[in-house]
Length: 310
Ligand code: NCD
Image (cartoon, rainbow, N blue to C red; front, side):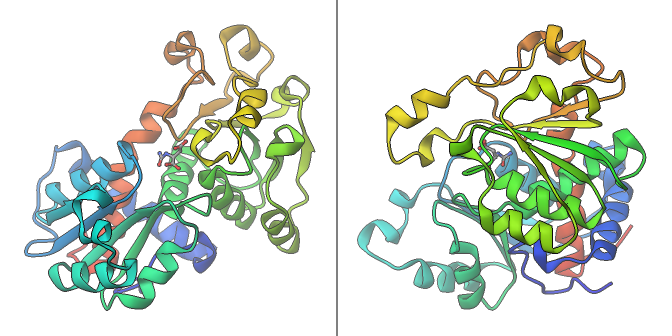
């Protein structure tokens, strides 16, 4: 399996076998991610973290993954602190950062930004979220979490709930799950349903998703309930956001309808989609999911930068 020097822009760039290889490698990274084992597998490398949108988990888990493997990190977190604020183009910024590091991790408000960056960078670029586009590394950790909890990814019944229009995590996830023969249910109001481009893509690949606005009707069949935040910052009109805000909320009463081994996932941050009482239930996997960003990103960094593999 050859990931050396590869850009990670979309989950569509992967085959099912490649995803399985990375998940297996992530498993081997687990003791390094917890700190039980140490090793400078990426000694002498430099990661450039460019986050032009807010991030806690993605940015810090890339940093944690890099630091624990002996890879140094340079970063910029605000466009206002870069020459972009002086009028520099993204292409020029990327060319410069490229010269200072071995791999660029980019989060950007515009869809397509990572694809553009990959064109201008000699070194590999990882898409850490491009506007309402996609978020392939989140998908890898989502799949890792599902496999960890359910034993296998094959044929899972997955219910995706919330902002399926602007939520980039569910775009990549729906595409990846299709490679594993998942049955997908898309729960959202019509105005926030999955974009046609993605639905057509997964249909072409053999998945025929069910669409509904009513979570209560489908929760009892789910192996995985993946709920997302309504992406307030992407709404052109704030009154449209108010109409859908708070529409879905998981609480313990609702979970009584679910199968006992159904898992609840969320890419986080949550606003009010999951009641805090759910945190202590057996169903809750979202904090484990967030931690899993570390071993999964370790695996990716090692595979792309040619690090010594465990
Ligand atoms: C998500 C994102 O940034 O797309 N968060 C994440 O990376 N874990 C989800 C969100 O912001 O709602």
